Image (tube, rainbow, N blue to C red; front, side, top):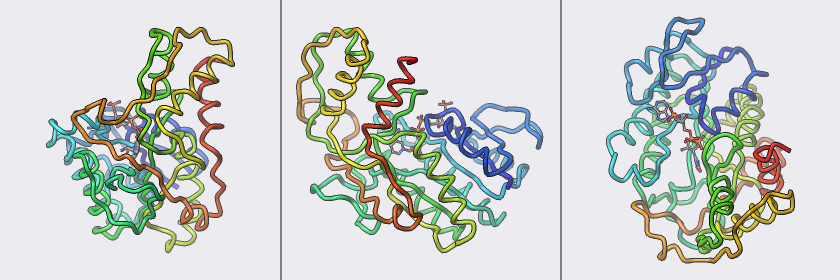
Amino acid sequence: MKILLLGKNGQVGWELQRALGILGEVTALDRHLAKTNYGDLKGDLSDLSSLREAIRSVAPQLIVNAAAYTAVDMAESERDLAYTVNALASQVIAEEAKRLNAWLVHYSTDYVFDGSGNTLWKETDSVAPINYYGETKLQAEQFIRATGCNHLIFRTSWVYAARGNNFAKTMLRLAKERSTLNVIADQVGVPTGADLLADVAVAAVQQACRKPELGGIYHLAPAGETTWHAYARFVIEFARSQGECLAVECVNPIATTEYPTPARRPLNSRLDTAKIRNSFKLHLPHWQSGVARMLMEAFNK
Ligand code: NDP
C-alpha cells in the first residue's frame, strides 16, 4: 500500500511515522519542501494548490492527515489561517482521496461538542463548538463527509507524547521551577497518547480496507477519566516515585473561571468509545499506564 502522511513531526505524526511502516511505503511530509521518490514535495496545509499537487504526485492509496492548526487560543485571532489549515486543507485532501479512491485517516477533537453535562459524548450527539478551533475542526469533518471519500475520523482529547509539547511535560517543567501550582479542576477528560492514536489508526485501516462499511467517525481515548488537576498530581507523584527532584509542594485546584484564556474550553471532554471498541474489536488501556510510560521515556529510564 502506498501511503502519504501529512504533519509528520507533530505528536501524532511522529508516532504515525513508526506505526504506518507495517502497512506499506510511507511518504511523510511536513510543511517544508523535501526530496521524495515522487519529486520535491511539501505538505503545507496553508498552500492548498501545492498540497493538491503533492497528493497527486504521490497518488497514495491511504492518506493520513496528522497536521493541524492546534494553537487553540491563537486560533481565536488567526482565524483565516486556522480555517485554511484545519478546514479548507481537509477538504482538498478529502477531494483528492475521493479522486484516487484512497482511504483518508483524519484526527478531530472533543471540542466539536459544547462540553455541557457530565455524560460521555457519543458520535451521534449534537455538535456545538464553543471556540474557533473547534469550529474549524467540525467544518473539516463536514467537508470530509461531503466528498464521499472512504474515511476514518478519530475524535480524541488531551493528546500527549514523549516528543512535542503537552500538558504533562509543562507540569513537569513547572514542578521543577515552582513550589505552588494552580491547576484547573473542573474540566474532565482523558489524556490520550499519540502512540495509541497511531496504533489504533493502523489496526482500523487494516480492517476498514477489507470492510469499507467500517468507515466513519469514531471517538478514541483510553479508559478512565480525570481532571487537569488530578492529571497534574499523577504526573508529579509519578515523577517523585522515580526519583525526580521537584520543587513543587502544593498543587491547588482552581476553577476554569479563575484561569481566563482567549478560547473557551469545554468542561466535559468525556468521549464514549464503545463504537470503536466494538467495531474494531479493540481494547483501550487505562490512561494512567500510557502517561506513566511516556514519563519514563521523558526521564530516560
Ligand atoms: P501537534 O501540534 O503536535 O502537531 C501538529 C502538526 O501540524 C505539527 O507538526 C505542525 O507543524 C503541523 N502543521 C501546523 N500547520 C501546518 C501547515 N500549515 N502545514 C503543514 N503542517 C502544519 O498536534 P497533535 O499531534 O497533538 O495533533 C494531531 C491531531 O489531533 C490534530 O488533528 C489535532 O487537531 C488533533 N487533536 C489534538 C489534541 C491535542 O490535545 N493536541 C486534542 C484533540 C485532537 P510544525 O511543527 O511545522 O508547526
